Every structure is written in C-alpha cells, then in structure tokens.
Image 1 (tube, rainbow, N blue to C red):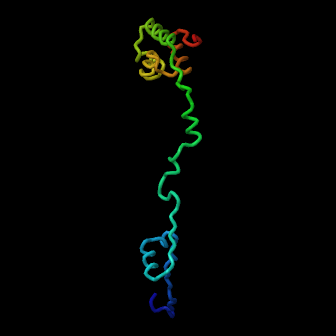
Image 2: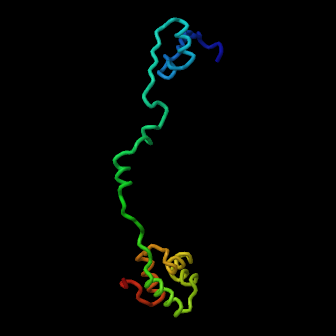
Image 3: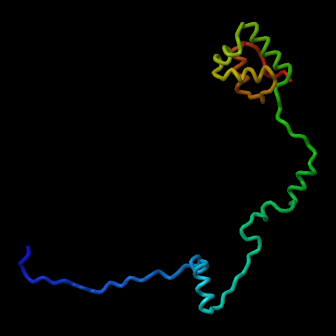
Length: 142
C-alpha cells in the first residue's frame, strides 16, 4: 500500500525520566559518599538493637520464671501392666504372632509391640479393634 494517499508520520518527542530514588537508595553508601563530598548535611542515627535478635532472647520473662518454678512432672499415660498382660494372654490363646494380630486390626506390628511392652499411649479405637480381634474384654480394667 505504498503510494496510496498521503502518509503522515507523527513524531512527538518521547521523554524518559528516571524514577526518584526511594528510601533504600537514599541510604546507599554511594549516595551518602556523594552527599558528603558535596557538603550536604548527613544525619546518621543508630537504631536500638538494630540488626540483632536480642529482644527475643535476652532476659527472662515472667512466663519463663513461672515455667522454671513449676515443679509438676507431666507425662503421658502409658499402657497399664494388666492391659499388657491381657493382650499377650489373649494373643497367645488365639496362637497369633504380633504381626498377624496387627494385620487383623489393620495396624503396624510396631503398634502391637508398643502395647505389649507398655510404651504405647492408650488409644480407645485401637483397644476396641484388639477386643474384637482377640475376643477378650480389655477396657474397663483399671
């Protein structure tokens, strides 16, 4: 379409300006040195605890003191001895291994091992599964 009608080109000047420096750029070492050379007033203020994490870890708070003063021993409830013996006896009567019993109740063999050694924290759902699989009453013996 070269030659069809008059062609106009609009040549307006394009002005590209730099952004004004933000606060971080004003604190740049290069900018500060340039201001020093030109004789401008420079104010430097050191912030309290700047760049450290002393506020989070220094001193003891009231909560820390309260925790230190607390003498109560907290521990999770473990499987009682009667329950351990009852599980082992019922499993022995059914002639099941720990892994076979675990398979019956859809748990890992480690769970049965923990219950029989007394290291497990009692879980009512697992105890119900064990009662059904072994056909013995395990709960309610405290």
